[in-house]
Amino acid sequence: MTRATQKLVEVLLTVEARIAVLRTQLTDGTATPGQQREFADKVEEVVDLLRTRADDIDAGIVAAPSHLLRTE
Image (cartoon, rainbow, N blue to C red; front, side, top):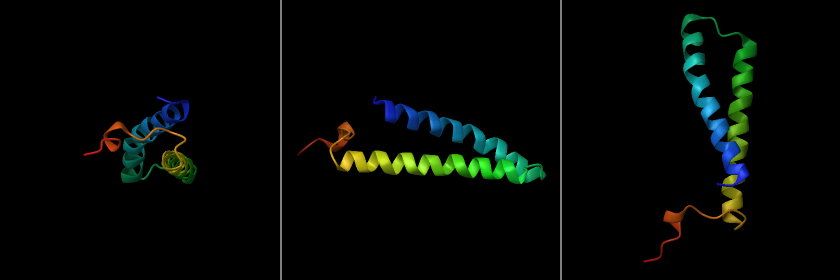
């Protein structure tokens, strides 16, 4: 796994963990605007990392997932 992919996986895990917390806070009305902005920033980071990785795969910089390499 490349360093960039590892970073993406770590960010995804962080967002996944925060979703449940934010959902609860939004439900009970305790999510502050700052917490909501912080979460939005983390989601934007995921979007940027995912797009960069996809672009790198298309450009041949990062290897495509192995199931995409099969030819039949």
